[in-house]
Image 1: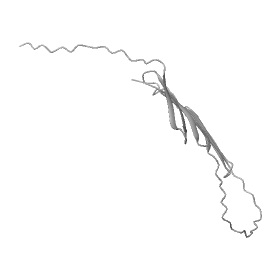
Image 2: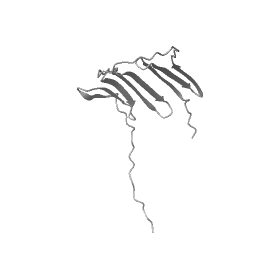
Image 3: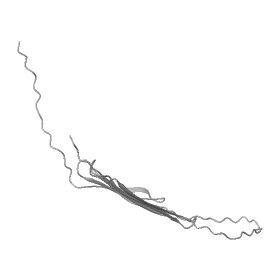
Image 4: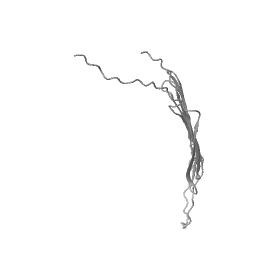
Length: 150
């Protein structure tokens, strides 16, 4: 049996911009069939300046350089060959995470999960099943005992 194959296709991207550490970079990749396009960037700032050393009085003062975490994350899969269809999106702002993921089920429905998580309420999810279940029709055949003729 000759099964047609769909060409591979995806889009992938991430970006980092950390003002505290100066870490700035990105990566983007796209594939359509046998062609892949890859773009990436790495940004660095180097400054040549004379260094002057000074003596400082040491104190017990502690400086906290904490910066609340923030990110956005997303991926999608749509594979026509295997039927795998799913997606996931998530954001974080400080100690609060919010997201949604969806997956197409074998019975034709879509499983959708919306969730939040934080240090006060913990992890909470709302699960929905969208669409109507479709089950293949099965035919019953009766089993007959063999007749022996002697």
